[in-house]
Image (tube, rainbow, N blue to C red; front, side, top):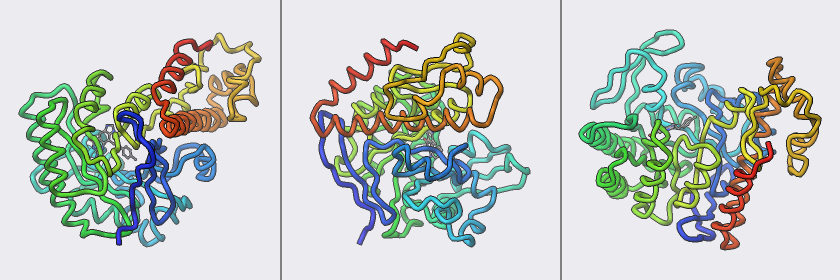
Length: 372
Ligand SMILES: Cc1ccc(CCc2c3nc[nH]c3cc3c(=O)[nH]c(N)nc23)cc1
């Protein structure tokens, strides 16, 4: 009996409020999933990540297979035990990171061979090995191996990568062997071509997956291209399965994704931006590096439910960022992740109340009016 199940609780237009039940706990959707690349959400204790409202976080197959190694993590009890996060974890298949980080990559029908960006050692990632690694990590939601290409691209290149990804989807599903205690997602490719995207979605559904990721986006295309692809593809995906938009995004990307039927999001942005002095608030993003803050005694947002937005002056946060104090990265990472969770929690409530378009309008108005 499959122990990972998606329930649709409410919908409002294309927007959906759902819940994924897993052996390690529930995931409320729309969900923002913080990225814990190498077994840690940078500058945060796991319990702090939970306190921001996160139900699930992401681990990275590529980084963990290189260091400390998948077999080593398995020998240490799996990724949940290793990092002491007992709730759901989603892992990527690693192909995307190979193409963006590794050296001397060679892609064939079998898979991809590459040299580690850490120590130059040789590695091979195939659909079968990727499933094995994600299973060794004991991940709760795992991804097929796919090929993601950057946009813009030639149509024949988009078609080639999409068709390869479909063949790898079939091999991934076979290697997955219907494990009941975790979910396997297929990944829709096809660039910005509606016909290729539709073929990919249909091909994946004929193989059958527990959820459907939308890949090949957040790779440099303008937001309107991403939104058009989403509007084209979500109606083609099963209504009763989660949709995961990979690598997205900034708050306005996430709001637009929710309005177009996406359930799950991940992005390194909130934590990376936090480490670079950018704070996300209800009124938009504020660059605390800017000298204009150096005498500003006002808190970041005195009406925020997050104590860290009320506790310190903007001048102090500016000081932490300018001096590159570790506390600056810690505080701004927490502030940004908490804001992302506030946004998705607000969307969940709005969809349940049948008022997602009002919520979206109010949220965008606050971003635009921002007194930062
Ligand atoms: C830990 C972790 C980090 C990052 C990711 C998502 C990484 C990611 C993309 N990020 C931006 N655009 C992306 C597209 C794809 C894609 O098409 N396929 C895959 N497998 N991953 C993608 C997953 C897990």
